[in-house]
Image 1: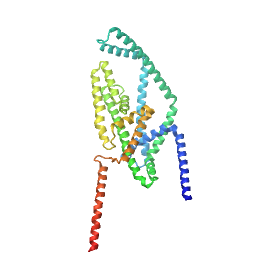
Image 2 (image 1 turned 90 degrees about the vertical axis):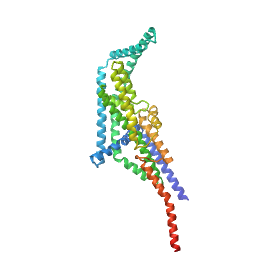
Image 3 (image 1 turned 60 degrees about the horizontal axis):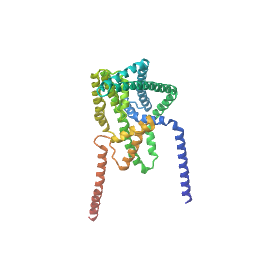
Image 4 (image 1 turned 135 degrees about the vertical axis):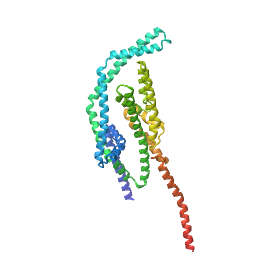
Length: 388
């Protein structure tokens, strides 16, 4: 009796010590919580690319394949970043507030002409002066914000560089040892909990693949299609606008329409109605219909089926709570809860078209159902032989 109490007391003390140390580690690492989240997210997103590169290049060394994967992604992002910096720099060098104010006044005059039949001349003049003064104030406000953002980025560039280095470092080791970490975690579990945890991880992988990989692939493809289409249409800076379209596609409420509708209005106002119509048709067909109704459903055939409401909430609501990191934290949290729900309710994991796993489970159940009959027949046969 005393030995059992001592073991319980020892287990309790060890548990409290482990919890205290875990809380201390979380506290000490909290400054890098965004870096850690980005690293885990990046490792999950880049894992399929890493595997594909190993298949194509036949590289067996995981360290080399991880370096190659990170290098390819870094070069792509660096190219986009430098392109956007170059465009912004050239446009800021040519920026003249007076010219912009003149263009805004032209837009105001055009709007007044459209409403001229319905608004008296005196009211029109007051509206024009008020809109013009508001526009000039808005220009000064936007310029001041841009200056603050640039100065803040320059002053914190050393911190950003250090955080980026930590992200790359963690990403490298997660690509190499990520699967081993999961296997080690499963090995230390009690034997009667291994199967349920594996089922949960299957659900989690399927859901995260749908929320992150499929969603991001569709957004990137939409941005690439948008950039190529805008280049063919003749819109300046297609690479930058393609990146903008990809980012807008991440937000379900916003979408690429936030770009191509204002762009079409702009060209229509400045006497290019044909280009405006082409942009609207191109945007509706190639940026909305094809990605949403053809590309995404085909990719989701091999991943977890998720209701649009969950997708909408997971990608939008957290943005208003935790900021830009909400686009990662939100889907991760919603997906985790959905995986728990599906594990608890016994939801079937579908990994391939044709519901292969469901068919396998149904076959297993059929075998289980036939086993009692088989056993009965075997017993009857044995009894008959004994009687003989």
